[in-house]
Amino acid sequence: MRPLLILLVCTKVLAIALFALALSSANDAYPSGYGDDSCAGNDGELVPLKREVYDNGRIIDITHKFTPDTPGGEDPDEGIGEFLSLSLSMKNGSLYNFSVMKLPVHAGTHVDAPGHVFDHYFDAGFDIDSLDLEVLNGPALLVDVPRDKNITAEVMKSLNIPKGVRRVLFRTLNTDRRLMFKKGFDTSYVGFMKDGAQWLVDNTDIKLVGVDYLSVAAYADLIPAHLVFLESREIILVEALKLDDVQAGIYNVHCLPLRLLGAEGSPIRCILIK
Image 1 (cartoon, rainbow, N blue to C red):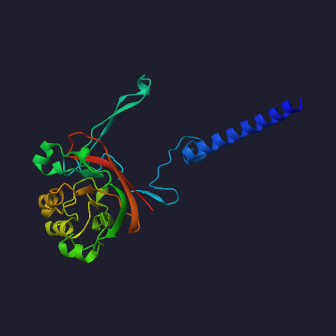
Image 2: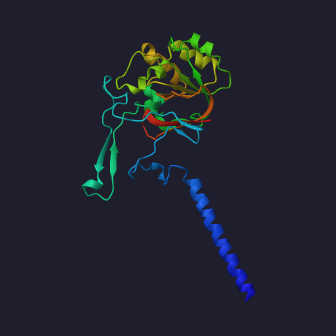
């Protein structure tokens, strides 16, 4: 009888331990903000928790939200307009909600493929799906560019970016002016001049160039600077990053574009991890 009693006690203890382990695993898989009461409003209504900084500041989202006013649409004076439509709605009797998206691939935070400015690369298939994810993910340096000028060869020299640095995010006057929060395309933005792009290609090991407006190239050198960057197919351009309230320094950057076969651009989600 006693061995049976001991067996029953051990079985109960094991069951409690397994239950506690399951709860622990669930909490690890679903951190704060998932399924807890922190999303409830004053009257018990559901209020989604939306953040740009996670894990006490360790993870920072540097992607702009898409809204109808997001710049980069076909009309340079307007935003992208309504980009989501609810094709099927539970309110109209459907068993589920189902949205359809129509979005310019160079609007908001996005990445350029070589086929963006080289037609023979476009025809050959150097699209978004051909980009090297290793370049888009890894240690990166966030630098502040002098606020009174475009990025020329002289400016690039002054930044003193060490050899061996492969990913650099350039924060400019565009962030201070909050240009990405204006729905029209502002041609007075700061970007790379052709000589600045050439200096970067010739004198650094940079393969990922990130900027804080819709174009890496200044408006005066819009196509020439793009050509310098993309000709080798080794440099990847990530544009319209959200870099306000982020300290300059070294991070791990993680950027993932959509696998849009045949597309020369794609929306991209980018985060920094300290």
